[in-house]
Length: 165
Image (tube, rainbow, N blue to C red; front, side, top):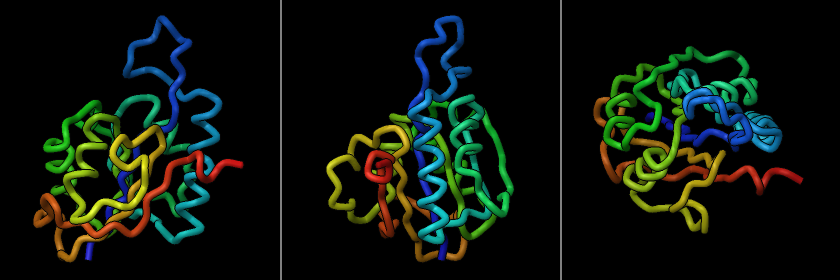
């Protein structure tokens, strides 16, 4: 079995007008969302062994905010920055550990989530995948190379607003 945790970065800060999109950081709400998502992952025993993360600043900051322990093997790649679903799947197909977290951007993350699962969760935000949205799904395979469209079984799906009080 393989487990994928598919997360869109937390809310970014648009007030830094001189920065490129790639360099945009999280805002205060995004930093809080990353922290509660990390707590949610720990509480539900969704501990990735490997992280494949976009090289953008907002995805890096989201990952730091998750405070994953023990620290998983992490790769930052420009390939995941604003990547299409097909490209994200190609990156996933090269993963090597049983539980992988991919941290990226819409619209690719949303499209990937929708195309990977055999049956979408009954959640009104799944199809638009807001910032911080996180899908956990399992695949009945022994290698990531065999993962393809409509094979994932949804284990969990959450958006940060549901976790923040």
